[in-house]
Amino acid sequence: MDYLGVIGYSWFIALSALLLAAYKLGLLYQLFHKTETKSPRHGGESVAEVLRSHNVKYVFTLVGGHISPILVACEKLGIRIVDTRHEATAVFAADAVARLSGTVGVAAVTAGPGLTNTVTAVKNAQMAESPLLLMGGAAGTLLQGRGALQDIDQMSLFKPLCKFCASIRTIREIVPTVRKALAIAQSGTPGPVFIEFPIDTLYPFHMVSKEFGVKNPPKGLMGKVVTWYLENHLSNLFAGAWEMRDVSPLPVDIPYATVDQVQKCIELVSRAKKPVILLGSQATLPPTPVEDIRKAVELLGIPCFLGGMSRGMLGKDSPIHIRQNRRDALKEADVVLLAGTVCDFRLSYGRVLNRRSKVIAINRDKTQLLKNSDMFWKPTVAIQGDAGSFLLQLSKGLKGYKCPEEWPQSLKAGDETKENANRAKAVEKTDRHLNPLKVLHCVDELMAEDSIIVTDGGDFVGSAAYIMRPRGPLRWLDPGAFGTLGVGGGFALGAKLCRPESEVWIVYGDGSLGYSVAEFDTFTRHKTPVIAVVGNDACWSQISREQVPILGSNVACGLAFTDYHIVADGYGGKGYLIGREDEDRLNDIIKSAQRECREGKSMLLNVLIGKTNFREGSISV
Image (cartoon, rainbow, N blue to C red; front, side, top):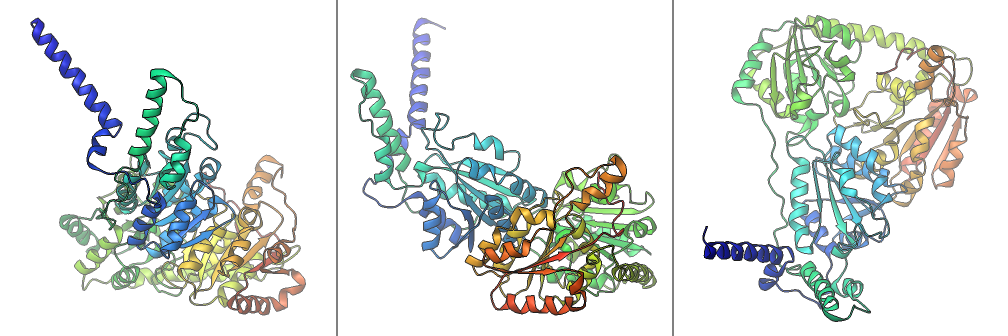
């Protein structure tokens, strides 16, 4: 290269660097877009406009100065702000709304500890595949990493937990970023997304400008450079902020089974003599209405085991809903359809499947679809797609097919034998206090047909899963695969807001109650009355059942027969203490609690229970 060529190349590099710097500093954008220094508007209004256009009805929060503009703007646009007593509860409530409404649940919390308090709840939403938007405050754009109040690296915390993470750097980014996040949360395998809002992207220009002013700038050239940089940063922050932007929802990408895949499954099922369907939570996801899925499954007449959010899909007395002896049924089945069900610990990693069975697996997530298929099982057909729409196509293609009646009848007979045995155990006397199985049977028999059941606990809740029968689709809420304690208050809050006319029951263990008993204050303030039944055996019994016989110690497992009913009274609800002396009037107490709940009081039934051998050997590894 000659001398002139070297000079030309150097000028090209220098010009490119200048253009890049101008772009990074927003100088090019500011040439064409105005900064409105007199406008009273703020970034929270942009957030609220996008949420309203996406039909978001609730934002759950624990208030903080970083996020106040979002909350105030949402309230002005008619979005209900529901404040809780813990940030995790806010996320759990948003999770419940997502599951029950088919939209994205939304929570907003302040920076630093406000966000770190949500980590468990966000991970739970990720594993439960709930579409969730978490919005968090943050230190100002120029103060991050400089020791500002509650300033930590929030993005590194949430990137492993969320499908999408973004940090807003200018106000003009808010609308497109929130739209994109909401679409991603619902696309493919649904899950949580996170957006960080530095405080200077949410407040009005006149307030932010006060923070950018330099009272005593350095003299000379350096002082002028610093002053210019700060003024330019402020101008770029607000440049084009209030220009009209599209706030409507973006398309949601959902994977579907192909015609060929469906046809191959039709052929397999049509030849089956002993088929079984395992429905997981994914079968309840939009866009297919759950009632349509229910009708499709009933037309097939194939016996079904229901898990997660699909519990209740077939009502409480369906002849094809099998609740007991799943392991035995799977060993005998010739075709097994895993519709959104994963071969993790809940299916013994696939070991419960008969290797001679034809296995059809459908799941939106490829990793979940094939989990442990390299070790304990192999799918005959593996489909990365939506389970609900697949079941509709399968039912349509099998029109005229009916599962041989003797197969579901034999499984149902096994159900009845096992459930009769459970009822017999329920009338046995425990050494002290009430038999927990009897309590659960009473609640199940008396709860309203529109009831939603929220479960939060270990041993008592594990028993409830065998005994309590959701009355219809989307009427059972449990944590999911993460097995998280503390979901009760948030799930019940979200459920009551979505279904205000329904009776909402929380089944608590006395250990798990401690996580969210303070939310009785939230239920009172927001007029969302629920009924909590607490199995109080003064113990972390799920752990103690195995720890004591294996390791010979009850260390850290013991609790006390605490007066939780008085705590509920203190938070504006009403509590009942129920012991063995109340056994004959247990039904009357439950009916009284139902009546008072309808009148607007949140109720807590503190039921003192004894020990049974119903769940021995229940440890999960």
